[in-house]
Structures are given as C-alpha cells and as structure tokens.
Image (cartoon, rainbow, N blue to C red; front, top):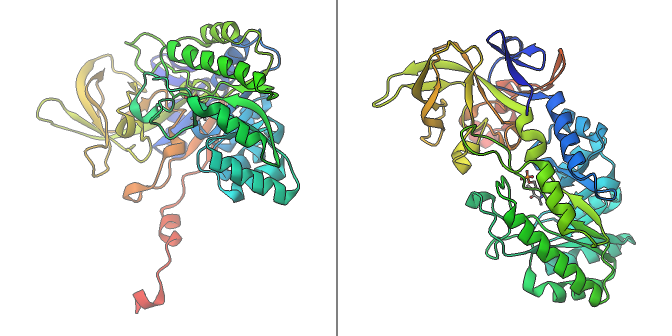
Length: 421
Ligand SMILES: *Cc1c(COP(=O)(O)O)cnc(C)c1O
C-alpha cells in the first residue's frame, strides 16, 4: 500500500498535488512519501513481532538519501551498508554504528578501518582472504572485529539473473560445502570474533520457497558450527522480499507471511536474528515524476517521449523491469503506447506496447514504485544532471536533494593547460 492517490482525478502524494512539486522543482523528480515509509517499517516490524529483539538493518543501497535514512533512523532501523560511503551516510543520518552491518565482496582495508573505528555491529565476510585482511587490519588497530560469514547456499532465488546472488556460480558468500573449513580458519585468526552466519540470495523474490530453503540450510549450519565448538550468536537472513510492480500480476508474499515462515524456521536457533530489507521498505514509497516532451508517431504504436530517461531510472534498461506509468491527471481514455526517454540508446525505453492513459505533450506522468534502486542508480549519461529528490509528509514537502546546475557538470572537469594551448 502507498500514499499516491487520486483526489478529484488528480494524483496526490499524501496531501500534496504532484503537479505542485513539478511546478516548483521541475521534472524529472523523485518524490517519496513519509507515511508510506513509516507504514512499511511498521508492517515489517509487526511481521517479526514473535522474535526476540530482531535487528532490522535497512539495505542502504536501495535508497541512500539522507532524509530517507534519517526518517528510517527515527523509526529505529539499522543499516546494511556495502561501502565506506554508505557507512558514513548512514552514520550522518543518525543510524548508530551498533545497528550497522557491513556486506560486500570487495571491502578494502581502508573501509574495514573506518568501520572498526566506528564500532559497527557486524562484518559479513564473503571469503577467506577477506577474513585474513580484516584480521590484519583489526590487529593493527588493537581491535576485535565481530564477524559472520555470508554463506552461498546454492539456492535459485527464482528472480532476474542480475539480482540473483545465492547460486554457487554467483560471486557472493563462501561455498556452503566449505563453510566448516572457512569458519575454522576464521576462528584461528587473531582480531576476529566469529559471532554469526549470514545469507542473502537475491532481490525482488516473489516466492518464499527459495528463502525457506536457504534459511533451513543456515539452521543446519548453525548446529554443525556449534557442534564444532563455535559460539554462534547471530543469524542474518538478508533481504530480498519482492514488492508489487505490475498490478496485473499476483502480489508477492506479504511481510506477515514471510514473518510467519521465519518464525517457524528459526524456532530454537537461539540467536539474535538480523534482517536487511531494502526494496520492501522504500519501493512503493517513491515515484519518479516526469513530463511528456512530445508524442511521435511509431510504426505500430505512438512513442510517448518523456523528460526522464534511463540515467534517472535504470531498472527497465538494466533488469527489463516493469514500472506502472500513470497520468497525473488521467483524461479517462487509454491507448497502447511506447514510453521512452530522450537518451540516445534504444535501451532508454520504459515500456513497449503498454496499455496506458492517453497523454499528450506537457502532461505529467508518474513512474510508480520507484523508491528503491531508483535515484540511487541515477547517473549523468548524456550530460543530464542528477535527478532531484523530494520528501513529502502530510501537507509538507521539501527538496531533499536539489537538481545540480549543469555548470557543476562542466566545472567538474578540468582541462590541462597542454590541452588548451
Ligand atoms: C541488496 C542487498 C539487500 C537488500 O535487498 P532487497 O531486495 O532490496 O531487500 C540485503 N542484503 C544484501 C547483502 C544486499 O546486497
């Protein structure tokens, strides 16, 4: 559920007409709803109510905007970070280090040092060489690093190949079958405190079966590790729960159903459970608002050319992702059209042969469910400035990232004298 609704035929976000924001900030612009963020945090937390003190660490990469992170920090969430930059952004937004977990296959010594200085809750290690490096860094600082290994359970998440992470051929985690050896290596390394097990098999999961299979493997591993003398106190079950993008498809499992499954599978584990939800918290809380530049005739269907492009919202070109596209003021008629951006790539296509509201030049359209992996992936391809972001709460709204002037792009380059001469 979200808070993007039509009031008298005009799309609002909470109590603010979308057109008011377009007028003031220009388009394209990302718009986030505080009420939706809050609702999703509460729904996710309620789903885990049977668990003892779970740590819910928002996957920062889904939406690292400072105002979004600060909203989630106020609601008590921690953070799952995958770079030194995300760590600093989470801390700057008020998320305490004691609720931060650091994932990723390529953590550098410098990032490890930064995380140790701040005293984060857990490092999720993804290989034995990474354990070696963290041991050295921690020793050089006279510190002990709390660690878990992320295991690769060799489970097919059944999602798009580019967001599947739990098959043995993927780069993530340590092979499940070698886990006992890897844990033995880590236990003998100075400066590491081996406290847990972690897993994350992919994103936009629309079926709980692969998650249940992965969690069952984690449970079995915890038993084996304890039998081998390890003191396992945490289990990080990752993120991955899908959100509804296409209203014509069945809705993905609700957090409550996920929570029931987790509660059932983890019964008797006797660990602190950790979760890393990203998309399910922010996906439906955001929309990308864009204006139609012109409509041109196509061979089969008209091309609706909008002022948003693949650099603003990469998901369709990167993952063949489907976003609902709605007129902000629907005229009540529908047609089949193609929706494209102005970038000079055929991949700059948001939808082909889409049944959608009839729109014309100057109309506003909203790309729905764009709060996750939207602005965070934006770039400046075709020398388009980064997309601005707005946060709404009730009848209030604020720009939480301004549109940079084009001069910033130009001035960012420096031209050596020997080129100028
Ligand atoms: C991306 C990621 C997540 C979040 O995934 P969602 O599908 O957005 O919930 C969680 N954990 C790790 C390690 C990730 O890489």
